[in-house]
Length: 286
Image (cartoon, rainbow, N blue to C red; front, side):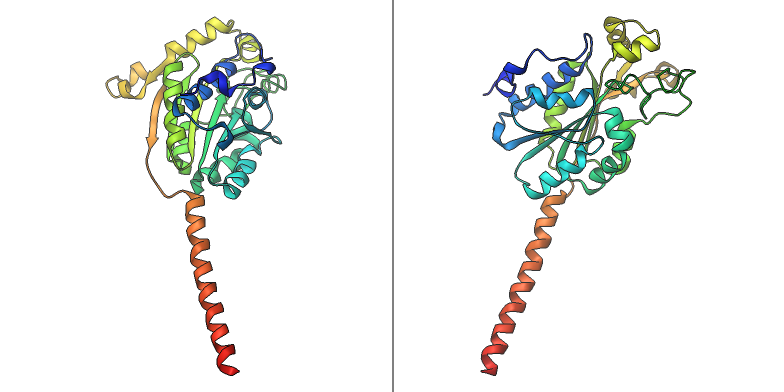
C-alpha cells in the first residue's frame, strides 16, 4: 500500500498557505484517501482553477493542471471525456466553484460526469484580498462588503444535490477523519462527486470579521457542526445556527462518459451496417 508522502512533491514543500489556513489539511486528506485506495499516480489527474485552493496541485505528484478562473470543471470535463480511464479530481475554492464557475458546476453535476470535486470553502476570496463569495454568510464583512454582505449564501450541499451529483458529502478541517472517509467514498463513485471541505481563513475572513485567529475559527467549526446522523434526534431549536456534516448522497446512476461511449458504439454499428449495404449494392451493380 502506498503512503501519502508518495503522492506529494516533497521538494516543493513547505507550502505557502497562510498560518492557520486549512487548505494544507484538505490536501493531506486528499492524498491520504488516494493512498488508502492505492491508486496508480499515473492514472490520476488533479485540476484546479484560480485562488488559494488552486495552489494544491503544485504540491501533489500527479499529472496536474492549473487552469483559468472558474474553468477547472470545464477543463476536467475535457480530460475525462478524452480519457475516461483516468481518475480526475478537481480542487477548487468556494468562489472559483460557485461564482464564475457556478454554471460549470451545475452542468457537470447534471451530466453526472465522473469527476471528484473537492470544494475548499473558506467563505471568502482569500488570494485576492477578501472579497465576498457566494458562500460568504449574510451580514459578514469583506473588502467588497465593508458594511456587511446583503446576499444570501448558497448551501453547497443542497446545490449539488439539486443539480444531480450522485455523491455529496461535507466535513471540516477539524473533522479530519470524516473528511478523509468522505473523499475516499467520493473517489469510489463512478459519477459526479462533491465533497465540501469547510476551512478557516484567519487572514481575511477571521480578521475582517473580528472572529479571532486560527484556533478560534477551528473551534467554531467544531462547535457548530452536527453530523447528519445525529441531526434527526435534535430539535429545530438545537439545530439553529448549526450546519450539517457527513454523507448526504450516495447513489448509483449512469455516468456520462460511459453513456457517451455506448452511443458512439451504437452509431458505429449503424455506420458499419450502412457501409456494408453500400458495398453490397456496388458489387451487385457490377
